[in-house]
Image (cartoon, rainbow, N blue to C red; front, top):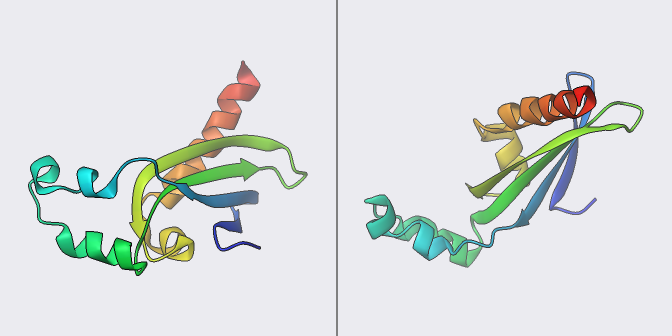
Length: 108
């Protein structure tokens, strides 16, 4: 499996997590004029490849393969996709949102 895609089982759902390319410019998004904070060290780490700048996509499936829904989060900065899954305060919320999106879709 590619480094930019991981599969996890969460609450009996199959969850596919993908690392997609971020179209926003990291230097602009993390500039001092935008954030009021000096992020130059983080930007250097992204440029060197020690940190990744990406969009996270979470897709939830029933065990039988039926897609429930998906959720996206841009502007992610983590060492890699595993770091995002294990240490992000957003991952579990994204899984819940993907499952909820499926419930809304099914009710429509």
